[in-house]
Length: 312
Image (cartoon, rainbow, N blue to C red; front, top):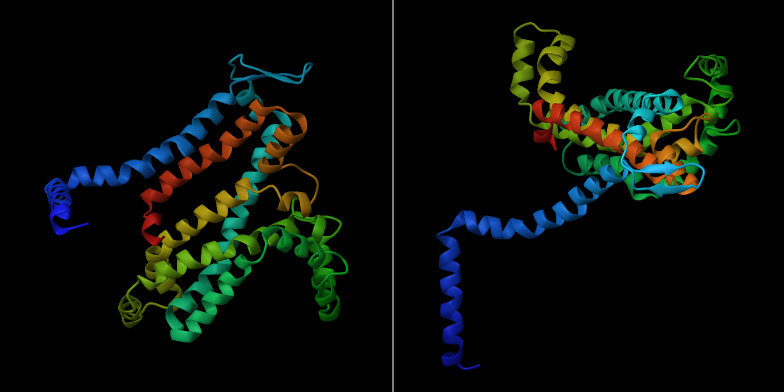
């Protein structure tokens, strides 16, 4: 193409560039329109369809879904076994979140304050390396680790801690016949799976805390525990909340670990899988799916008010 032929195209391009340069908000709208439209259709649209389907009626006799709108599915969530499923899932999600935070904070503090360069890279690699392996493979591996012939029982036998382990397994709501069939074992697997999602936000939040604040607290006579309670924890707490978003939501929706590890008892994820896959009760499955959506909507609102998104 000759220079004369390219001149009109160049002028048109310059005119378009000048037009959008002088109208920054319009340019922003043009750039954001495609992804926002996609999110509106694929995400918000899917959620709206899910909520709408949860109001359909399921004919138990004909095993068919009827488009007769009703709130019976939501009323059924708060009765009998269904309420037990919701409480059981939320309780485990809360326990996993607390356990992950207690384990993650010391490690995150050490990474943020005492590592540099290659050493910090090694710690990052160690934290993220388990995430590179298949989730299902890790879950199946834990069933062997927690079994009576697994390494945990072997260590307990050789360190004299077997009586302590047996005592833990007799506790209500925690124990079971073995670790692999106990809520304690299920808690360990969940915590292992989601721990990296708690470590990284806390580490990022601790890095934002100026070291001079900790030094000033010590200079004013505060003991290490006081400094942690009154200075470090309040400033790093948004990182804890940010990590809890991942650990809590992932536990709420998981359906693989509850099937492989722990005692009998359905979780929200397994109930959705059962209702949709085995029974064919799509309205009830959609109603169960709305529970973690509602819980996380409230959770995210509170997390935003606590400044958790600043630590992501």
